[in-house]
Image (cartoon, rainbow, N blue to C red):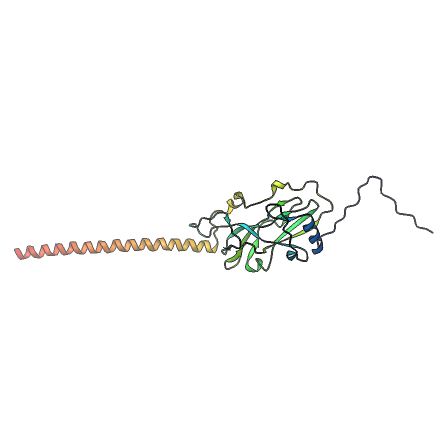
Length: 251
């Protein structure tokens, strides 16, 4: 006896959504290159096969950095970086790092972003910003990081510090991010909350050193003043003794 055929969906009914999950290396290769999802600031495709990982694509350190001041006497701002220029993040300090590449997240995808372990995490650098980019995002990525390690973290423009991974949505979102929502540089409103001195161990040591230096300077001044007073007192006593001796001699 023949089985009954499966009922056909009503005419005009939407097909059930499906998800393909995380993008593989081959899917990243196809979509990143064909759709120009990784470009430079002028919109030129900068996709590189050498930067593909099994399920991600490596992004590099870009042309701007901000590192929070370690002591109250240090003044910092967003710093431009020349090609291959190096910089450091002291222990206990925050920083904002900007990618060289401009990223476009398709409306049917969701991006996960992370620091690369070998380049950053194993040195004590921790990502304290978001871990994703929304569908439709267009711009450079800004990473807020904190140096939780015991020593300076030395980095350089062009270092492959970041990874981006893509995942399918069940269908293109109806409200993707607007192009103007993306970052092309490190904005001053991002650094305002950490623009002051961060009270890390390094910052506290800097404060102690400043207080000690000021105290030593004050003590030195007191010692100099005391020496002048002793010298003046000795002169006055000597003069008085001389007068007394002369008085007795004359008498």
